[in-house]
Image (tube, rainbow, N blue to C red):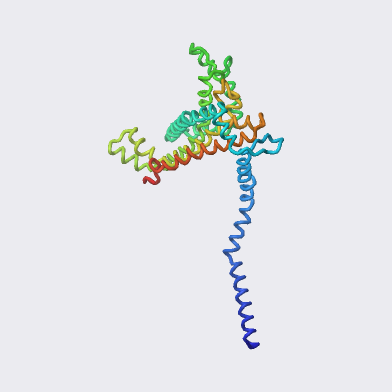
Length: 319
């Protein structure tokens, strides 16, 4: 090859290299790099504070670990022991499922009723909306402490009302029959958060639908059942998912109000996980319970997602 040919090849290679550099550092590539730079804190946070703890908790669930001594691998023994030897854990699952089956639908119903009331076009309705939402701003521990005074057997507000009505006072927090209903009543105190979501959904329902139904002679119940409820099912779907997750994680109410009593009637899964990990030092067992709780939430959530196409409507069409 002649010298001129070699120089031409070198120049062409340099041109290709420079074009590749220009292509690599184009505007799209810089924008992509900036995205990763700005997203890095969030990605690192997820990896450090979520992925790593989740992986380690699963590892600890396969070990005998008391925080002080090194973890000892025992395989699936913790999981087997929970379902075959630990009767209290089965009771915790039963208590938690009771709250999911009874407290969650009741809470959703109260939230929807409040939203329908707050959707009325009357003077001063904004004041009532603020009043019903205010309890949401109060920390759960504070609400639990307030309700310990409300449920007090001697000086509590509820028993004072019962005495006024000549009804015998009740032991709200110290009897098995009333302990869980008392917690359910307390959870309804913060129904304002769901009320706000339903209210936003109600505002999006076209008024033309109500007017057409009214002209056709539909009564109020028919308009609610055939127009209002289908149109707000996306909000209802969201509330059901979030309600399942939060109800499975009940802890503060049991910890502050009843300490799991009486007779373990308010031992919920999160409360038992806390006791096992930080009071009894059974971190391996607590990790196994946490993963069982996660699997239960996952199963119920997947069932709701799979069946949502039969009752959730978007823009008036079933998805």
